[in-house]
Length: 83
Image (cartoon, rainbow, N blue to C red; front, side):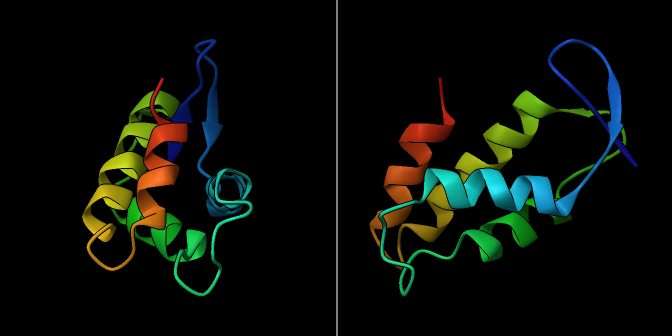
């Protein structure tokens, strides 16, 4: 499966890259309540062949939005994901 990058290049989808970005964005938030690995796992379920990096970001924001019911720190991640 591949992702289309912002410059149009295709690259294999890497769970680790999605997780690393979410970890970076959630730095300083409560690791006990805001789990970037869990968000990344849920995002990867929705990834499909040819998805763009922007769409992955939107999917991550939607996933974090759904998780704000469990803890409001997820809302902080949404703000950083959306342009």
